[in-house]
View 1 (cartoon, rainbow, N blue to C red):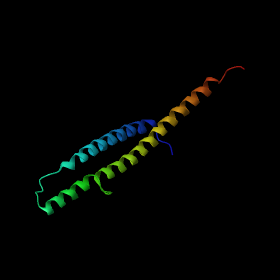
View 2: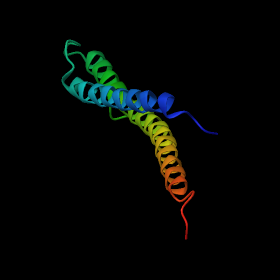
View 3: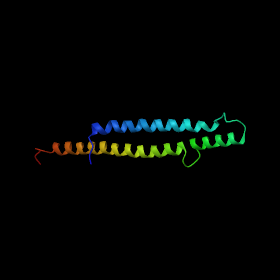
Amino acid sequence: MSIDTDVAKPIVTACEVLIDEYRRLIVRARHLKGLGGFGTLDSGRALQGKFEGKAFGSPDSLVNALESHITVVDGMRAYFQKCIDNAAAQEQQNVDSLRGVGRIN
């Protein structure tokens, strides 16, 4: 499968922007450690712990989900960048071969 570089370049940029946004969200989620307002009762503290765990620290936390998304989007970015690199390499190869046309050895 080949993708036109005019299509691939904006996709690479969009992937980079999305990864940056996911990283910003990770930073914000880590700040939820100081989550408060649940009171001093054991049930309030337990609820606070559950919410903090949903942000980060547990296997199904927001931070883990965002890191998983970063991995996927980075793979997409790498694929589209490879399409651009391959197209550039092919274009250079075509230019090099055309330079030799008509030359007398």
